[in-house]
Each structure stands twice: as structure tokens, then as C-alpha cells.
Length: 571
Image (cartoon, rainbow, N blue to C red; front, side, top):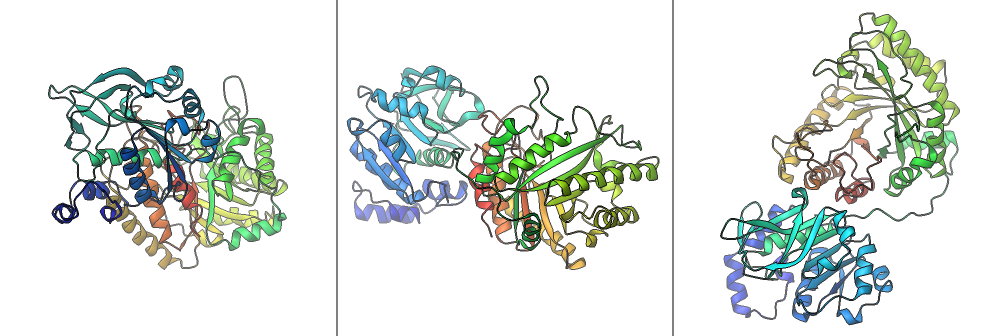
């Protein structure tokens, strides 16, 4: 238990025993329960923290907390002992505890903290010395003004706070971890987080039995569950030949990949295309996540749900030379390539989507679709693409067994495409009678996991238990079927667990890293205990990977990134 690892010299031994027994479910116990896993399996585990503070007692207590939570090596230094650049390079995370207003941090330390991409927890004074433009660009403002009238903390409940000199912070609401409240009802941010920075506006009592310890624990975990983008690393060109790579994919017990959505034809004007020079960093990021595959979606279009025409949109369907650039670059980086073929509607009524396609002239539709798929198979073979998904979420068309079997036969015999063939089924339409013709049945795994925003892990895990029963029923019917999650992800917005399939699960433009993180944690736990799921492909790496204000699906540059990295290493 957490309490046993903290050795407060200031407490009398007998008092500790009595208090510990009487407060088994007191602030620290309930804090750990509400914050999911007690010892967080952080990216920082086993690495080095540096604490800078003039207060030796507070530094020592912080050291004990960090060691207990993260198993990390923690070094405490006075400001005069800090060595600019060298210490920033040597340590993996930083805590600055400005407990004395008159003892200023050195300029070299300030410069390092402005530049670093590593996690920084900054407590109480002197945050205003960081470059104003630097902080302003991150959506927060720290003032050199103070107030000691705030006596309560508000964070899913109210906790009492000893009167303390509080630094005034302004912040976007979505960056506030918790608030401080005065008797008058006035509220200000008590702790805020953006990018790799977490600021606590006051000096917390470093006492596990104090009412204000639970919120402070949230600030600590928010700070050190942040995962900075990995530094570029050298990667080698894929070493196996084409046939060997395909064989590796077929034998792999758990394929892992990340989507790189290709939603426009090329670089034109203000649009960002997916040319080699634009998206090399994304491919590198995918490789460094531990993924083995990159997933490229090529979308075709028809006029509406009932039309029989299928066409390439000159602005939206990626050109083949664009795809060639990505495929070549991916292979150079050691990634294998999976291409998804998808359909979209140019005109749609409310609630229409591509799962509702029902062409007036079915034969005409299938003739056009087969032609496009066969052309993509020839292209894929020429460019040594290792896997091809021949359709994505065509719910209303999946009963056309005759046409699907005919198409798969032509792919095998006419084009002689040697790679893996799959189909991407929607999570609520898994009864694919012709799936026995495929190398794998993919699932767009966007099952709703809760009914309310910000669910706890227990709720999410229970949902996955029910989903697992559905998958077990599917495998009972088709025991030889290889199942993969060929698309799964969660937007960094509230209600992403309720509407995982929605780009806008929340009506406002509100960022929420917490719900995205919890969804990925639950997915990790499920996959660890689901050996019959033979692959997972995360949606997605996008232009917003490095954007701290991103509310989209990308997990990169967000707390969920570290969990994605763990998913890639499951088995």
C-alpha cells in the first residue's frame, strides 16, 4: 500500500498506526481509487527526476512521493547547484518547488525549462519568469500577484486547504486540473496542465492525510503521465523481401499498426498533401511507437446512398503517385503497408453514411467497384504492399455474398496479388458469411463503452467484458477466423467513450485528455487478456500530432501516447 512506503520523520510512530487504521479509505486511499491504478506504470518508471527547491524538508517529502509512485531515482538540488544544459540533458523530468518568493531561479534554469520537452511540475512561485510569449502560446498566463483568501479545493468534491499565498493563474477551462475557491465563491485555477507543463498555484501540504493531498496527487499524475514526442532515431530499411514480409504478416500472432489518413489527392494551395516531404515525420513517429504497419485509406465516392456510380474525386481521392511516395518511404523506415479501400457519399441526407449504401442498379455498382479494387490490387502488387483491405464498413452491402466471393476469386487468380486480404467490418455488423475467403476479418472497434462522460476504468472494463462475449460467439461460429481490430481510437474530447466513432462526440470544442487516456488504458487491459485478437491498428497519426490544442483522434503528444506504445508491445 502507498502509505507504507512514506516515512515521515515528523510523525510519531503510534499516531501513524492509529491514523492509518482509521483512515484506510481516507484522502490517499480514495485518491488512488479514483485515479485508477495505484502505482502508475509511467513512461518515467525507473528514470531520473530532478527536484529544485530551497526547502530541504519539502524536497525530501516530494522525493519519497515520487519514488513511491514511479519507482524513480530522484535527485534534490539547490538552485546554485544546477548546471544549465547538462542537468536538463541528464534528467527525465523536473520539479521546481518555489517555496520562497525572494529566492529566484537562475536564468540558466529558466532557459532550460522553456526549451525542454520533458515533463515539468512547477509549484507555487516564479512561474511568471518563464517567457510570457512561451506560456501565452500554451493558453495560460501566470501573474506576479498573490492572494491568500482561497481555502477550498474543488475537484469532483470539495477539499479544505490551509490558507497559503497563492499565485494567480489564468487559463483556458480545459487546461484546469482543479480550482481553488474562496469563501465568497470566487474561483481561480489551482493547478493547470498544458503540453509538458503542469503548474500548481500554491504550496500544498505534503501530508498524505491532509484533505488537500488528493488533488495534489492528481496534479502529480497529470504531470508525469505526459509522454513527450520521441526524438528522431535512426531506423533501418526493411530487410526482408516481399514474399518474406507477407509470410511474416500471416504468421504474426499480433499485428500492430497506426493509420495515416490520406484524405486529399495531393499538396495544392493551402491543403496539406501526403507527399514524402510533408509526412515523413509522421511515418517516423509511427515507427518509433513500436508499430509494424502503417495503414493508408484510399476513399472513392458515389453521388448518394442509392446511386450506382463510383468515382475518384480529383481533390479528395489520393493520387497513385502520392501513395507511391508514402509506401516507398514507409518501406525505407522498416514499416509494412496495409491499404484500406473505402467509400463515401458526396451528398447525404441527415444520418446517411457509407454503411447505408443501397445502389439502384446493383450490378452496375459492383462492376464499377470490382474494377477499382482490381486496379488497386495491381498497384499494390507493383509497389510491394503487404496487405489490402477490400472494403470498409459497407454494412448494407455485406449480404451480397456472391459478389464478394467473385471479387476475392479475381484478386487471387486474375491479379495474383500475393499479400494478405481482409475486410473491415463495422463493430455492429460482424456476421460476414464470406469471411472464410479472407486472411483476416478486420473490425472497426468503435463500440460505445459508457453512457456518460469521464467513466472510471471499472465501467470501461465491464463494457469490454460484454464485447468479449460477442466476439467469442463469432469465433464459435467461425473458429478458423482471424480477427483484428483494423481501426480503433478515441477523440481527445468529452464523451469519446460514449461515441468513439464520432469526430465530434462533444458539442463544443473542448479538449479532454483524460477520457481518451482512460479509453486506451481499458483497451490495453482488454487486449492483454484477449489472445484471439490477432492485431490492432490505432487511428491515427495526423497533421495535429504536435498541436497541443488538438481535439482529434491522434494520441501522439498526449498522455494516451504512452499507453499506445504499451499496446504495441503486448505480444
